[in-house]
Image (cartoon, rainbow, N blue to C red):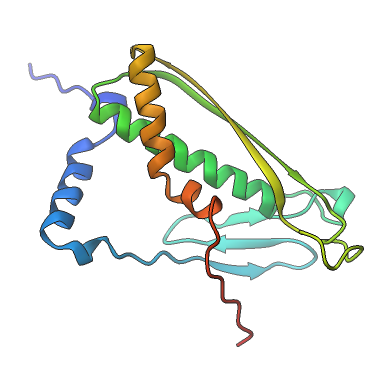
Length: 173
């Protein structure tokens, strides 16, 4: 009887290594474009269609005039960062031979609603600060965990996007 085992941390590291090798051979393969389409569903409800996945619902809490049928956009931003970091920990731990037993990432951010509500048009409508706490249970040594953490935080696409100014163009079609 042949038994197959799941890849370490359930990560297909061969696929990742294959992509990295292809990019080394053909650097332009690394230049990718990602897309989403958001459709308004009435009130403060909308949904995002991304590739062939089920729509991702967005709404505001009742205290902000919504019907609380889904996370709001600023909560989704926190989720995007946490999910990106989780991918980084899983991929880089697997590549380093580290088995993850449990991973939880707690995220929170401070947002002042004055500008969003039109009460301070010159203020900042976005987050003032984001805080992330990673809880990682693994077979790694403390030194391995520090190195893994530095690698993940140094290579996170969402982390990099949030930590620097990114040109943004919003056009009315």
